[in-house]
Length: 351
Image: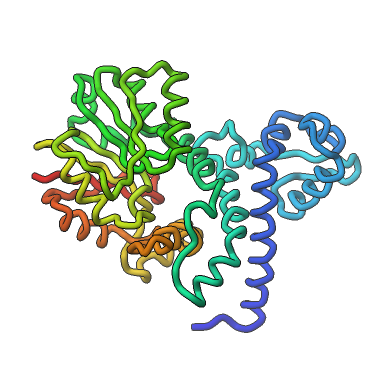
């Protein structure tokens, strides 16, 4: 049933305000203003700007938006502004994986390609990766916070017996490794195992190697390679992908390559956005609207730009299971992390 006209107009006005607020939250994250205010007592705009080494006039206007957006508290008599602790817990770098301000940066990044996306609506095709120069950096920032908190102690134990095998020493790969943080975390935690990260991005590989060198990791290496042409046979005991399948040009070839690269008894852990392949079942999923938007304006379009399959971010578990089966996996199971309604964890092997 449609909403009454007045209610729908109110919703649209609310949406306009919230979209604007998202941009201002992104600015607060990028300038470090949330981090500064979180450790300050109530202060004037001049004091906040001075502490943050920023221009006072811009800070004052940003504080006005934050006040109207009910994110910052304002004492009009003293002209003081304060960031409540319960807000800081979701907005600062100290919040780690709970820092939701990181995600707000995607709004501005996606807006940069709106004209190109509109053109794709009219003529087909897609917008290539090169049009998103900040994408790898934004993904790396967000995933690093999550992986630091959960990869070793929560995610890897989802695979039965894996931790003991990693401690003893096995060969591990991460396909579509981006900036390689997951590989480096695992290599640091399990020095007897050997780790390889594959990614097509030269910038990502360079960042991965730089981090490995800083950490002194002799058991981590990184290879620039297209995930659709992995070219490895019975090489690894454990393979991971983290949000790396759905935006591939040929995810079917990627999955087939992963299956081919596993040794007998090997296991593949596929971490993807939690979703159903049926739209109606995603209506109430957390951040589903955000993910469909990211899909339309990034994940789907970068695949279509190369005449790819264009799976999209919300390809869903049913499609994932079907494609894994077609790739040669015979045992496919789902795991769940309590409290995590955002990610899907699929454990697959060839039996």
